[in-house]
Amino acid sequence: MHGEEKREDYAYVLDFLSSGRSSSGRAEPIGQLVGEEWFTLLEVVPKPGAAMSQGEKVYIGRAERDKVALIKARITYNDLTQNAKGELPQAVSRIVKAREQHFVDVFNNAGPLNIREHSLELLPGIGKKHLGSILKAREEKKFESFKDISERITLMQEPVKLITDRIVEELQGTGRFYMFTKPYVKKEGRY
Image 1 (cartoon, rainbow, N blue to C red):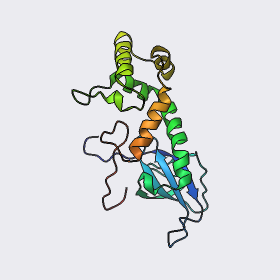
Image 2: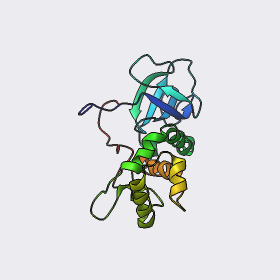
Image 3: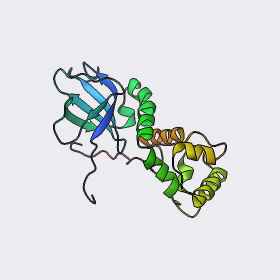
């Protein structure tokens, strides 16, 4: 997929505004979603008569969609409604749990960023001491699940929470490094 633009196939509804944004001139319904694969934040227009509920998983791929008529735009964290910002951690957590093996593999395969910093240190709450424990444990035997990580690395926060917090932080766009998302660079045109 080199050079090809990555697109989401499924997304979770963060908020549904049945009469659109109050700041908008038009009263068209709007859905705010987070993508399942790359955590892309999107604003969509539902098909006529289709309603979306918070937390619902919807198809947004290239084939025939049942609820989404149009993907309006990729948006930033600051474009989200307060409801969407409140729902984001729960939606991300659901995605992380559903894709457990992918994120366990991050613990198994992550490498250094530079000579002073390891990519696992980007996870909130992981410092040099936890990093040393993780690297030693994964050398002995690769991690098999979030439960396995929690049991073998003492006094570490729940792995799902660490990853969820990091993804939300990346979506806020304040970091230098990105482990799980692509930084949003606004360019003209559609998603």
